[in-house]
Length: 244
Image 1 (tube, rainbow, N blue to C red):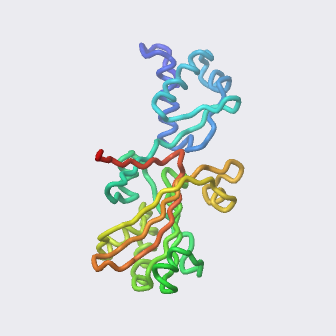
Image 2: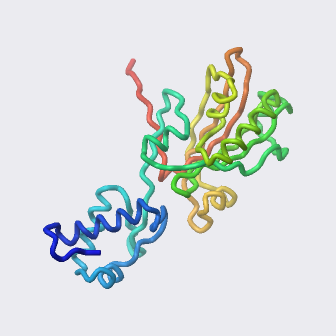
Image 3: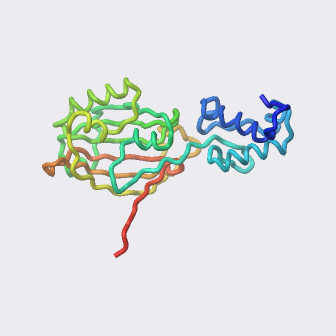
């Protein structure tokens, strides 16, 4: 509600109202906000007031505007440090976001060239989707050594039931498997039909960051080959490098 007697300008009050609705989930990530005319009618304010309020939200990186289509709720960009391993839950916490991970499939018999090269046929599949504020932002295809089959799956289901945000890296820490080295390669790709559907973007396939990883234990044995797909409009990777 706009308080007419307040010293706070109408546009700042409206911005605070919309921001509160975003943070409380009334407007979810990806949702289109009401039009300027709808805001004008709902709060009995001018179009100029609405535009000023929306501009403040744009400056706070809470929304984005698409010419001719409207204003949409934006997920704050998630930043992932590449020089060290950071858990999915820590990435979310750093950005002040809640999230969780869901197990989509397990031991489905899907093969992966990298996993077959490194593990032969002695691996199982664990496919998971990571969410931030109910929006899918990362999809994991993990091909894990059968040595850890029972323990990894049991812990994944336990963490899923607890509605935790996690990846297999978090699972290994919980079951006492120490990761000594991770080899990773980054790619930028356009989502195909399957991936677009998984990210709930069938009509507007997102650009994805594909991260191929191979995990090694302290004995130099390969634990897992993983393919992770991150929404490029929501996720960024950072790396500090030193000159020669």
